Length: 288
Length: 323
Image (cartoon, rainbow over all chains, first blue to last red; front, side, top):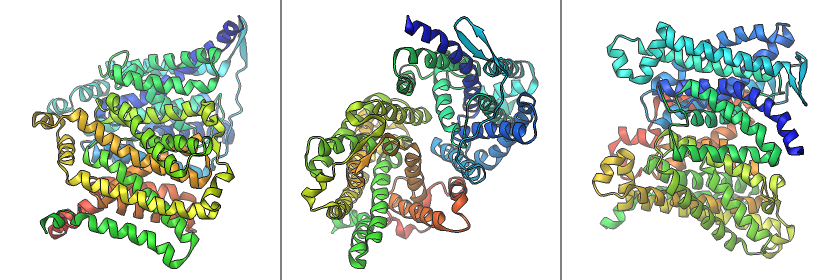
């Protein structure tokens, strides 16, 4: 009975968090799908999103949800910059090159971030209160974050399926050479996709900052979670990423009711490796 | 004579290890010995990784898992069961080799980035698992009993002994790397690297070859782990399975030139030297990570074959010596 109560309190939290994880993973998986690059600078960009919220809210007093717009735009621009500086030259090279190129971006961001913010923890003191749902309290910030995550996913879906650049992105995902032959400006589309990927990472970071304390290295654990979610949902499948995020959130909600919390990463990563082995296309199929 | 010529490529690596071993002895300085230990360790680990990465073409992002896993097993038998360090090193190597064998059977089916992701997952899963394992001390880890050092004549003596064992392990790593490179087995691996399907058609039994390459590349890191944590006197999960060290190893191999015996040596020197300089320099110490990142990016973008590959391309006469 006690376990059941614990489950009731931790499960809603896990589900709400899962949506936000989903957004982070969507960014990773979008980039993978379009250009077969695993973006190892994903974590630091999530961390930059967190600090974006911190600076905008604490230093300038802008509401975090309004600030989200600025962070999204900056994230997009940063992604395009990273693409042209680090990724464009190695896009057709073996995987090691693109992995190390994005990892060097990771080192650069972490290095500068550490010099500016140090590695001590930061906290955005922002609250929307909460409300009771049975025996559990649901925090307003988490609920809003989950709603925004759903909105972002819907927006991404509309962009990919209803707009011209979005259709170009899907064409390049399917077959870059064929898309180029059809007149798709593939370099610009690749840069745009990378920008969108980092934008999603920054947005998820900005949302996470409203309910967890963070430092410049915090992005790393969300990057690893994004890998797990991306593989669960099928690498290259953005909608699958949201479902994968939900699964991970639910797992994080369920496991602590039965085992110690420290077992959560063991199960997560074991699941990750097993899925890679048994069904590398993920539960919901890879690229669409 | 012809036989000797075939092994000319081993000449330079042996000279380097010999010089690294003699340097602290001649200068009679413990600081130099510590520096030398760090570089020898980097050479041994990078050369081992190179067997998988350089010869076989599989990018392992979590190779450090063998270092930590072997280290834990070795330290456990030395500390809890009272075995000697030699037995501990042997156990560490065997444990890592076995782990690699079992993992290899499973994950070497994955190709390209999927393999890289799986190795990250395994490293993180192992770290989290050991964190929960009370036998190995859980999150606190294990602290070596000080009395263990007595058998070797005290802590200072044990530290000195560790240095010579390290030199031996580095030497072994280089010999293995060279033998793999010049053997028919290594030729098979290189064929797998260039085109796995074509290699299979030509009669290379790719799954077996890859598994053995994985095992070979795991044994030395396991042994090095035992030795390092024996010298360190302490092991805990974050120190045993640091993901960033895995990537540092990749950088070293990449820097020096993947798929060569000499490459990881040069890379280890260059990387450790650069880090040593950046961390202590007044201008760069705050942003040393960023400076390393910029350098890495430049190398990846402009010299993807690494230093050795670059020289080999430009000066054909060096090809025999720069193996």
